[in-house]
Length: 169
Image (cartoon, rainbow, N blue to C red; front, side, top):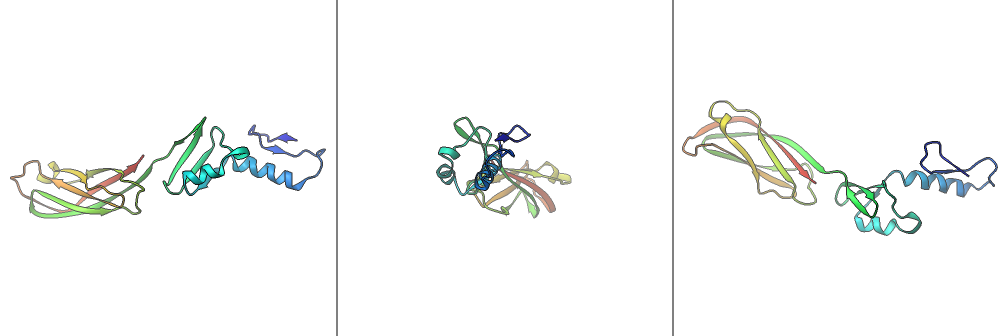
């Protein structure tokens, strides 16, 4: 038997090898699958499947459905190589106020509370000096708070775009 032309160690039958379709198919499947992104329900399911002859090797990648993340095997440990992100924008309105807030629901829930960043995208006059922040951050929603630099000055805002970005690392 020889190996593939790409130096990946995938065993390939040669013409002089005894015919054995099962061995040929298993060698090709194992060589390809081990170099693919393997999908598991959880880390426990991954551990249950990858042991013995199918033990993980350096550089192997898996995707876990419960965390919605990609992992790479590095020596003795699985290291996360991707973060889960979502982003969007909302349009805010208020009248004669020094602050305004709006609740935002994520397009899909995070496994745990993410970091959330907000940006007051535009504004004219006094609104251009307002600040934005996120609070009450949960797995499925958060609240955007816009507030004036001087609470004594009341202003109005109409269709003010506020961008948001959420990341779970």
